[in-house]
Length: 440
Image 1 (cartoon, helix red, strand yellow):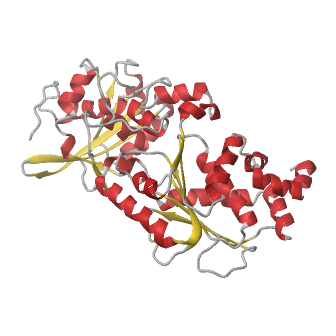
Image 2 (cartoon, rainbow, N blue to C red):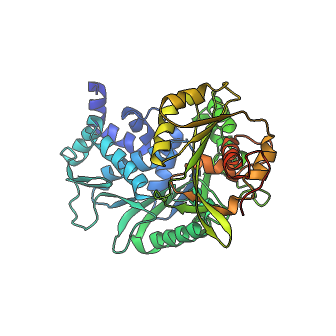
Image 3 (cartoon, rainbow, N blue to C red):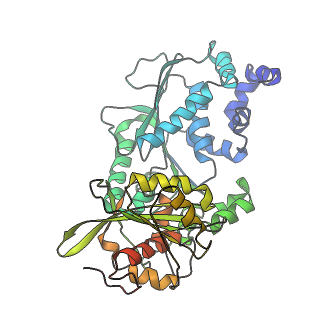
């Protein structure tokens, strides 16, 4: 850190800058993408003892600014307070708390705390998702900053500030039970966990018309920052890239902050999450390859597990990669070995079998084939009929599932449903010929 910044942060002027324009302090800490609108968000969320809610498009640096930088700023002026960072899962919340710890260790931050409190900030407790500092003089069971997951335990805990970030996710979109649970936790956080007269904050993006944002909106208004109005944060090129690589329904929800009706979509209410049964040794896979930035590579792994009422039940997991297949091949090998894949079907149209040869060289059993079937017909004939009988593993990535749920004829990206349909056709139809003669 230069002497110029050291002099600034060790002064009243520097402390006032952190209070009024925290994004500039963030830039000093290396958060160079932050701008004045992020200072606006930090002040709006933190400088109030009433509930506050903010929706901002994905990629707008709301977590970096509000959660990481905002928590540091708040502790600078409120050293005895207890902050809870809440996300869908504890691990996600712990990542934010660990980012706070890393930023607190920086000499720039240390200089500001030394000037404000007369001593450098030191950790009394520093564990995954849990921080207590030497400037906290009030003795409480709760630390200075604690990570919590929506799926965790809250009983007996109390905080001066609760910031719930991305507490609604894809799982709320695809599971009524998940939506119900998230709503219950939101009410618990807003009424019993936050101390009376203290502030709670809710930030993220919407996923479903009946998700927990409806509960939040019942006790506070929601400030909205869509990419259409605030895209200057990331730039036009970034927006267009995201638009090309995101399904229309998901772009509307996560970037425009609008929800499109999904009643007309082919695939709804996936059965998940299940835990993969590794005792099943008959897993097979299909790989849909891509070579540029406008398409995804997609890998689908499926294994028949049991029969219920005469119908075959399948366990499945899916992954996507937004880049050249050559850069993903090592990970494909890991997935295939993890799920004990017997062999993998690889389409040869795009690269004349080059990817299939490279995967074979890695020791995988490869079944190359040439695709000649209309994509929409294939998805309608071979994925749609078995959809109710597929149980999806929880490790399926969000992009993969979103592409299936948002599938419409002609819409892109559609690599995930294409991969899944191809695998069911090649492996589980009667003869792999494209005629839908499933066992059930």
